[in-house]
Image (cartoon, rainbow, N blue to C red; front, side):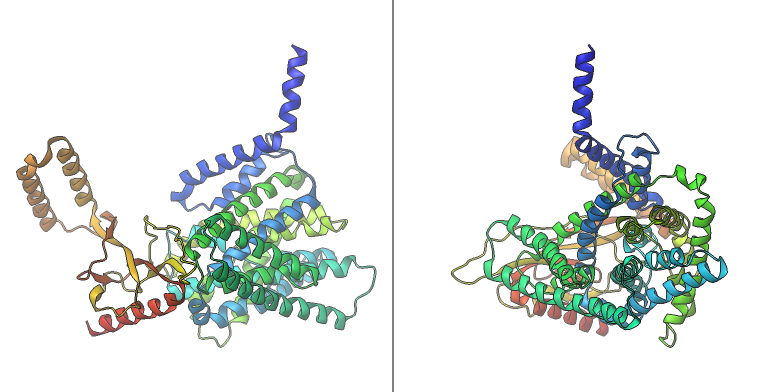
Length: 561
């Protein structure tokens, strides 16, 4: 008996990673699905799952290798930042370029400076500790912000500002942290000039390398046009990893290069782009969840109370959220014409997330004495940010009257892989076009569009708002029709007549409405409407032209109504 017990125990110990990771991830998914209605971000669920299953919880997976965690976290961040860039549209970037890019660059610097002043001069903390904490926790987290604000959307301009800032400010914080850690751990005393030149090299060379590699990748894809869709995903993985590795080898910012490569790829036309986007989204989601689970497993909550870290973590969160971030936002957006309440919301929307916790592993990875203290302090402050700011963002948006109805995500999508005609040089792609505001505004008939030759509209997804009583009546009639067939036509007509009478006497408000999604066949007499999502099959080189035709035609018809 003892032999078999030892046999199975040894087998479990040898395969703990294969057992632990799937079970933890499944627990995260099940919990996240149930908590989605309460707008609790999946990354917060993943963080708590890591803590529960880690060494201070159920001890299901004990992991304490900070150097390996740093390497794995960097790998995950490569794909998270790459997809963040891939999702950044150039039109949105142009619309809010100054405030978003400003907050992502000098806004991060200002946040770090104000945080350092608070920690060092007001609280009297150790100079190196205050400096490291200030640069490490200076960036915000896009995934956390928008997973919470899905139910409380903002105006297009404000949401674009927050989204692009959150996606773009991570490289800046990473760059500040790397330079600071290298300076503090270097045996040589770096002069201020050397420090500035290193900073400028990292910040300027990274985007250049990312831009060039992304352009080469698009040329490679459009020249090869592989027949197996898996090859496109391999090219994507190689692009992200090589961009980071090549740039870091030349001592430039690999993270900034990866983000830039994502922006370039996301705004260029190439074969099977929709499939590549879906794959990038999946890899980013997996990386994000795994990253937070890993960080949750790594943390030691018991040490917070033994070393009085709770009080320090609370002070760090308070000074960061109520002093440093607001000061950086209001000072960094002077003379930009941004309304006061918008700036106030941007200041409160500075949620901390994955990047600060990952950066908090750098001091320990570089064998700094206060490395574990920094990691625990940052982790606790991020946890407070997600719980306090994250849970109140929707309420603050309503309080400031900034919540506006935005475009919902259709439950239908269409993706198929096109076999390209190599001899004829036909490079075909499938993509979607979202028609602009307002919802339901009448646009042109499909037959009146002047689309390029061989363009095929495949599907139109459209939302319809109906009362809950209408939806329930529709379900009842569908069930009756399934059982009794068409002989219940008279009963069906009477049912609808009763519904119309009820609706006339008591009009329904928005709280009693539900979404009904339609998939419309694109016929010549089909009129396009605002917020329609159109799936198109065309040549790669015609994508930009088709977007212009559809949007221009829609705006012309809308303006005449």
